[in-house]
Length: 239
Image (cartoon, rainbow, N blue to C red; front, side, top):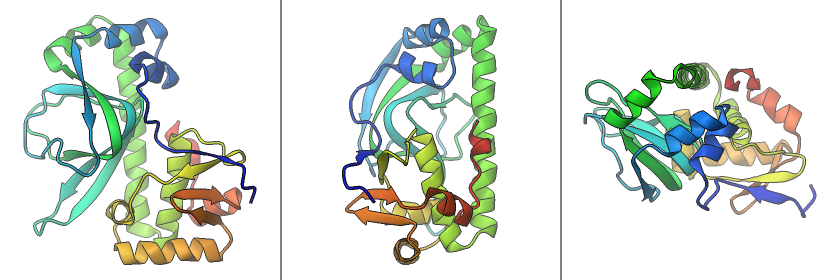
């Protein structure tokens, strides 16, 4: 594996919300309307409480940079990460209390607006409604894939699949770039439904198989086609 590859992780610098929405497929004029909506921008530090479950969520969020997670806990307090939101992704308002909490995986810049400002913009711009419907369908498809991942795939395939999805959602070219792993081993365990000890064993196995090499948090993919096969990863559900 070449050692002069650049690595790419979650972008730390402030970025334009309009740019991230345009990259996600929204027209420039509509992206600008959302960016001009009354809002506040907050920095969310990783692994600290941000939004608790069971609380009314009458706000809209857009991730400008970084990486957020949605999570749920069982009766004994064990956490399952049930969704990820990358730069350009949104978390829309909902009726009633939210069944999930929100926490940052990496330091994130998040735009937060009020539902009372967001809804009228969408109501008078049908293109925005169609855009958010497509995003909701994409997130549903990702959720179905995660359900299969935790329910049917073995531990190695689960981690391989998560790595492949993270590469694609981070827009990384594995021939030229390496992934700066944004997750702790415990977070990977909380996503894939296993223990952090087992996640450590899986990474060792992926290295033994010659699929990845690691240097600190940097992951190079030595055999991209094969790790996709191991993880049963087919990127069509992301589009």
